[in-house]
Image (cartoon, rainbow, N blue to C red; front, side, top):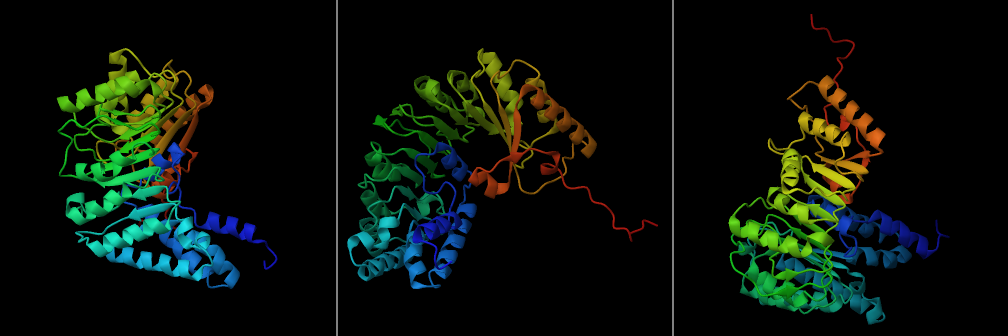
Amino acid sequence: MRELPPEIWLRVFAFATHVPGALSHHDGQSFVAFSRDKYGISAHRRHRQATDLMTSAGRVCKAWSSLTTQFLFQYLLIKSGNHAIEVATALERYAKDGTSKQNCAGRWTARLELALEGVHRWDDAHSAALAHIFACCPNMTVFSTVFSTADASLFQGRRFLRAMCDVGSRSNLKRLELKGDVALLEAILFPLAPSIEALWLLPSRKSAWNQEVNHTHFPFVHAFILSEGLGWGGPPPTWTMPALQTLCTDDDDFSEPTERRLAAFFEAHGPQLQHVVAYRSVLSCLNLCTNLAEWTLPCGIMVQAVIVLRATGSLPTTLRCFTLMDLMSTAFMLRLDHIAALTEWLGSDLFPVLDTIRFLLPLGRHNRRQRSRPHWEKAIEVLEEHSKQRGVRLEASLGGDEHTAGIWTTFSVEQLLDPIEHSPPWFSAD
């Protein structure tokens, strides 16, 4: 092991500390997978494990200590203003220990995440620390506030917004993940519109988009994710995104203003979309996505979705991948009639170029109480036969860790149902 060159150890450490989807601004698929972790549970656990591992590895020898610095600082996670001061101090210490600015730890930082916990007071010292962190991290491309635990109204004060104005001047940022209201967007998003490539917004619960905004041009945004939009429905029609290929929204608002905004946006951008993750409010616009290759939706609306699309006179004939999300709720749980509908679709001329059906399933397997296990086994056996005849792959991703890492395996009934419990040989019912 002592004879291994540093390049090999760097590859080993990179593999061991990888947090799927956290750093990339080019890969729309990994970005969408990462956004399924709405509360940061998987991402923060992986980050913690990577930090602990590299901290331990750095104590093994001097050679490893210098190699692990890169992986300790590539993803900076800040939980409070005081924590920002600690991180800024650590960056300053590493800069003093290095022989030149090129050797400072901050040059490795690709992601800065403010995951503020609860009601938070932000003061000028915290803003100064944040500015110092940015000054030390010239290669940072990702900035996030989306995993802050409280609603934005509880931490987004005047001092915090002033600090965010400094973020808005960092033209090197390529990916934004923002939890906040219109004031935060004005401080960060709009100034960075010319350079952003991937965008995830989680609006404040106390703010809905009830006003028109100025025209904003995002020339390079290829992936847009809107979580818990609460009346947004999608990007405002005054936003133009000529490079947009991936759109994700979970808004179920059917109000007339929302439907008008959606219709206007899809009329302008629908033909360029390749991947859409959508709930019911978007169904009436999917017929405008004439080049759609991948469609993701909750299980509970799949039958309604096809009915709506047939009524509009157009189904996406370019669709290659169809993904169903089992959200473990009464309305959106995968049911036996959904399996039957998929089987019927495979036997028809719907989606003629379809090559993959995927299932996003919860980790906890549970009995599907509508029918007994033999009914499920038979239904899935028939689905597998039809998919084999059509040359369509059936795949599943099980649990949050697989969902967020984009891990897919061959679909089977065992991923849906509780395992059969056999009585131990010594057990007797008498």
